[in-house]
Length: 116
Length: 321
Image: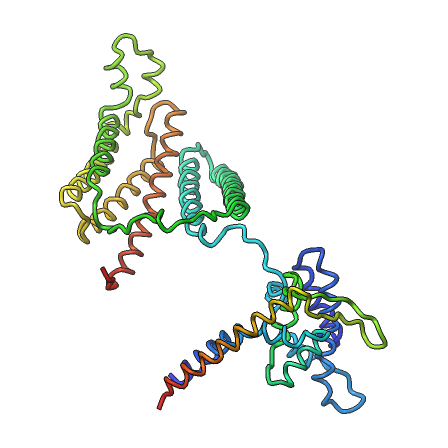
């Protein structure tokens, strides 16, 4: 029973996190990042996203026109750098506003329904 | 295999599942990123040690199988849309069951003198049947893909809640429609029971061409022995519909009787297809057998769906209104 509850919790937490991954990634792409550095930046701020989720997400966001990217070959290994496109910036601002409003509402709701 | 070779193989497997125009790019990027991840994971290793296979395996397992990883990069277009999958399954099921029954029927009707000849006939029929089954499935896939493509190309943006069909009680009988259906079935059964050849002769008299009469004459064995059993079952099915129409709604008892009758009719049709002829003339016989196999298979699929439905609804859900 306890194991079932743990599984349910994991699934629901995953669903919750899935909803905010795009916003989290966009928030760190105001400046240029490549996949690994973005993951590190997010992890340092407490948002640990699996590489198998984050790297393909960057490609999908680019395909949607929200990111631009280019290969850089410097002293280190070749890396593909991403950053917000103009459409991506606009979307990020809107999503951030929605998130703040939603956060306030959720705080209220959770405050009201505190389980004792 | 060393760790870097493992990553190379993995990225190759991911890339080959992607559209050509993104393969090289994704492979190069993924290889670079996974190598960097691997180096980070191996940072705790003692100086001089290289990332080992176990560390690479853990990293790749956490990334997911190549097929799963490729799906995250690119959502492939569906051949059969989710909403069409049940219909596809039903049509494919009816056609494949019919084909299977017809193949056995052909096998039973082929002359076989020896065991070797029998085995050769079975092999040929199995090969032809498999080929035809694959052609049928292929044609169905093309049709369903085309329907989905047209739907995506021309989406219905003019959807209006006013056009929604009214909620219908599935057990309530539409009397006018059912009476029309019963009259149609009764007419069809009369034609079958009287015999199409006899009806043509009665209608045209001396002018009826002997070739047409011969084309629609029943096989004598079928007419004398099995036909009346089948006509009786069909008559019972019509009587059941009439009973439901008079009552105005289906009840559990009539639903169960309907399932039993459908099953019996399917079995009778298969028995006729497998063990003998229905018409004396071969072209008419083949068309009739095809129709019987299709009807019997459709009946079987309906019975299966009805049994599932009955089991699923043994505890009715309370609905408002």
